[in-house]
Amino acid sequence: MSAIVDTLVQQAKGLPEQDKLALLDALFGLVSPSDPGVEQAWIAECEQRAAAIDSGAMALLDADDVMMKYRQ
Image (cartoon, rainbow, N blue to C red; front, side, top):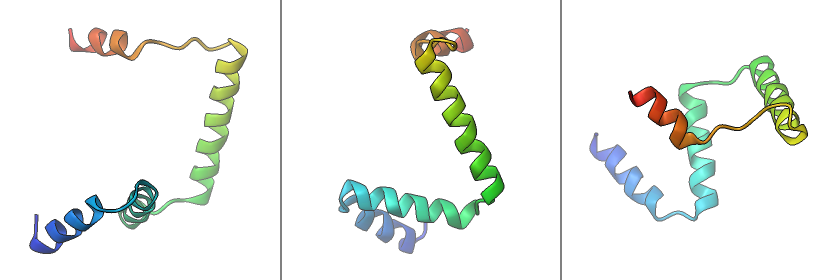
């Protein structure tokens, strides 16, 4: 990392959690600008999945079980 990046990272470590999240969101936007259509599609997908989980139509899997399956 460059000295500037190192300095910024050290400063970010001292920020409150909410500010860290806001900074992360802003930095992510710099390297991956969002397309409103894609963002709306993801929001709709997340809402559909959450509703399916809440209704019992979609089962949840234990993360440890999934990771074990793919590590083999």
